[in-house]
Length: 302
View 1: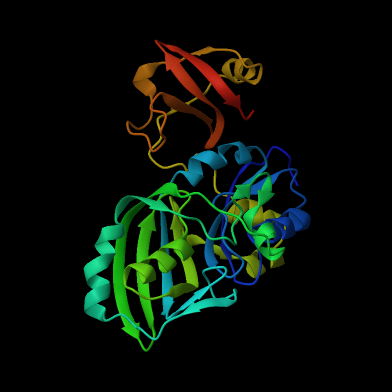
View 2: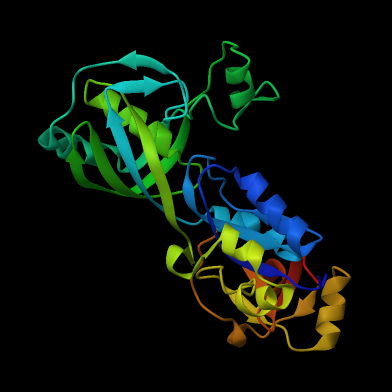
C-alpha cells in the first residue's frame, strides 16, 4: 500500500466486534502503516466508525469533537451491570413508564449535563480500565463527567421498550442515558440496539460495511473508499498550499507566509478558534496558527 496515501474510510461497523478488532482487520488486509478510529463503538453497537489512514491519524481529535447521531432502544424494568443487554440483571421493577411520562421528562436531559459512564467502559480508574475491574468483580467508583446532548426525540413505545433518536457531543454514553432516563421515571432500564448513524461528515448513506470493505481490492479502495483528509473536517478555516518550497519548509517545521485573502471558509468546529489547517490537493499537510501573515505549524503531516 502506498505509504503517502492518507485520508478517511467511512466504515459501518457491525455488532459483535470491537472497534479495535474492526480496524485491525482493515490494517492487516490493506497493510496500512498506521490506522486509527474516532469515537469508539461498543461491540454490541453498530454504525459509523470514522477510520483514519496513515498520516490522517493525527486528525482524529478533530473528528471526535464533532456531533454524533444515534438511534437506540431502552428496555424498561431491568438495570444491568453493563447498562446494555450484555450484562447481568442487577435491579428489576414492574413499572413501565407511560408515553406521556417519557415525553414529559426527556427534555430535562438536553444541554450540558452530568453523566456517570457505565462500569463496562474504557474509563481508567487508578490506571486500570473500568471494564477490566468489572470483569474481575472489583469494587470501584466512576466520577461523573460533563457531556452535551443537543437533541432527543421519542420515537414510540411497544410492550416494555421505547425507541429514541439523539444528537450528542463527544464522550457521551448512550447506555448511561438509558439508565438515567429510567431512574428519572422511577424504574430501571438498559440500552439495546444502539445504532450510530452520523459522526460529523461521516454518515450511514455513504458508508461501507466492514465485510464488503474486506472483500474489495487495493486499487478499488484507494479510488472509491478513501476520502481526502480535508473533506471530512467540517467548517474549518483552511488554506491551500501551492508552492513546493512551502511544502518543503513545512516538512521541516518552519513558518511560511500566508495570504489571508485566500483563506477557505470562515467558521470553525474546533474549540481552538485560532487553529488553521493547511491543505494540498485535498489532503491536510499541517495545522497550526496564523500570526499576522505567518503560519506557525503545530503538527506536520507531510
